[in-house]
Length: 517
Image 1 (cartoon, one colour):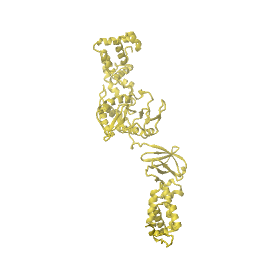
Image 2 (cartoon, rainbow, N blue to C red):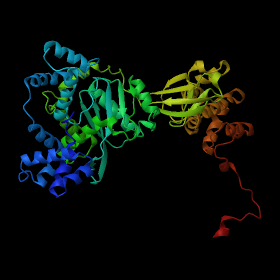
Image 3 (cartoon, one colour):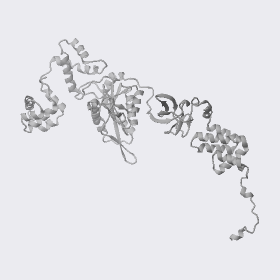
Image 4 (spheres, rainbow, N blue to C red):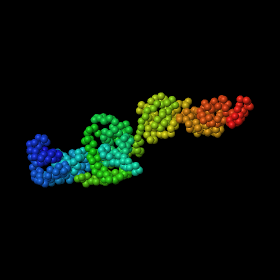
């Protein structure tokens, strides 16, 4: 259009250069504008008297204020345009709903007002209205479609109550595309665990799940960025699968992909960071409580030029489009590799615990996925078994059906069984068996030792075995070989204090007690 305004930044440059004495011809060359355009804007400032709008005043005006100044110079709006503008707030809400387009809304408008604007003029005036009420908003996102995720560049902090040490906190920000309903949380880091926890807290704050999560290319979300096929972090992808949503990372070095959350960050600096700047917090819980209070005010504050807020727009339009939350929260999973041992178990080094696997997979390399509550074992994408996670060091978690038939009796071994068996033999045997069970690193090692010792009763009898265990306790030697050796040598039959029964013979070569006086 012939009278389309140029960017307000260039308008500022025209005024600054002209005030500095630069000719219209030179201004035209420097800014790439025609001389007629430069002349038009200089004439505008002359109408408002340059003595009033000094160089300093114009330079201090925001682009929006300058835009309004030029708008005020235009001729009054027609009745036709005033009628159309009354519909714009309604159109703004309706465009966020699935399937609603500008053409559809124009048809509704034109049916009621046949003398009104045609489609092209309708689109133009709606764009102009959007610029006035929200210059930074260029896209209309569908309700329930995307959640945009980012971190602020600046950080908040807490102070240790005892040492006075200052700990910086990362500030997580996310915003729903349609309503711009915002969530903010301060955490220790941007690591995977903290990041996923923040995203999950946001979903439960909203009470639903959008169709897609749109994170920036941070390491916790994207392991390898790409314009076409970015590689999503395995754990974050699993998290998204749990919540039945997609991950759509923004393109690297493309700030427009996340303009909505970038704008939210700027607002949060003003409405959250600034009010908290003179307050001292000692825990994350306290600072996040204060953030949520300020966030509530922010979300319920009306948009500029609109009669509704982020919260009201969320409740009216977006919340009903979100998918329901799952029954259980997500548990972050860790990954490990293992080999199925000959005893049909794999070893999870994280907990130093053994879990059974079907014996048909003995010798195979498997993938172990474990969370706080479960341990899953996979082989070539097939889940072989799942166990409740145990943290008893060197313990065994065994399903009887996983063991081959000739080994299934091993799964019935347990400490209580061996202690009860030893009690029948005698108190010393019981005490000895209990020490072995406590001393051995691996349960299977202790079970085999106990079994071997208790079977000695078949050859030596209960009384001799009990005495042999008593002597072995005195030696502080806790193994099958020692007990077996005592029985073989007959040491279990020796007196308790043999040195008391030894008589010293009378001999000339033996010195008496008087020799040392």
